[in-house]
Image (cartoon, rainbow, N blue to C red; front, side):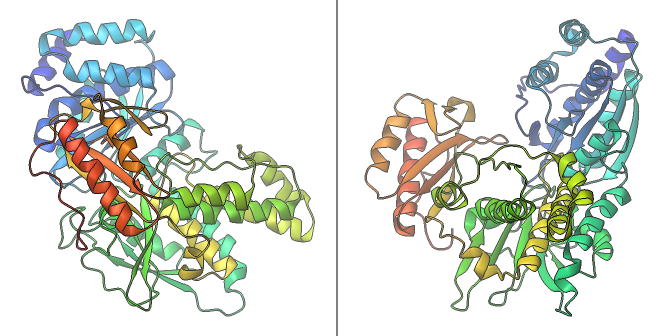
Length: 512
């Protein structure tokens, strides 16, 4: 390790004094102008992680659904998964080290993690469309080269695409080709194979309106749609030519405000979806004939996919189990549907067995096994992926002949509301029990418990944002009025007990 060179380059990427950062599930995120030193240091860390794992490591420059002036960085581990928790600690230590202590911190990481500095290192880099991303990616490259790491800069990618590239490279291409075209081809081939029979009867193919949040999803989907055009027509909105990234559009906006994005005209019963800024989140929605807005979020997406998979497994007649992972914030109705109606024992299905069955079984069983194999190929198993999820959903709707209203009617969500409360420091909130109980500040959970008792079929949770100094509030109850009222009262309790800043939370209005 050339310590003199590290010191020299570190000085060129100086850390602002007094800035303390914490690596979370979303990596580091903040205003872009404060991130240069972090990017350089994450380049260094990625090289050490690559040497330690003897694998390709990914670095993604993005702030996902955050405003355009923010940016961020996260590292991707060898099989496309999030960075290991022990290395999140190393990332935090390195990001917060003063210049004069950098060498000491780096040597300490090498010692703790048993890093062989003679081992080769290879890093892949991707970035979103923010104006700050190119320069910040260059700072990552500076950190990589100082430690003698090799790298490949993919340039503009969705976050899930970078996860895919890392997974492909570390499985020697078994998962797919580690190129953007390889990604397009793998997903599109599976989609076309899956939907062949749905459109063979001369049915008109499906059309879908997609809000791209003025982000990277627009560029990638525009390139990719030619690959699957025979099965699906996509019309793109908020493609980045006019509006700002994630401003009045995107999955987070639509979900929080429960209304359509700006810039998209919706006719009744048209199927629409929104990505977030780096295309790793998706929500669906439509307006009914009375003009009411209907949101179809992760709960109903999981239910659609898992019920279809269950049908295929029953058709095959094999004893394979499937798993559905829900957060504590999943709507209570969806959990009841999955437990009481689906009655599926959830565990991990075996990909190799399914692909083998697709070759061995006869007639209907083989057809079902092939469908299952195609869904596996269509799913990005390295990360949540809006493009991949969209294609899985569209394939299932086509095969089952479901309209968006019929999908929505699988079960009725309990009315709910999500709100944000600005606080001076989000770290004053600590949670337990899968984020369902607030441990600190004192008295907050007791206040929430008392408020919940006032409403029927109600639940309410609070959790700190992983990206900004806000606390997210979720409430559900037997009516929308009750859910809105409960969410407001819990927000007021958070404001009072957790150091709220700015204007006190106001009651929920129709145009939230």
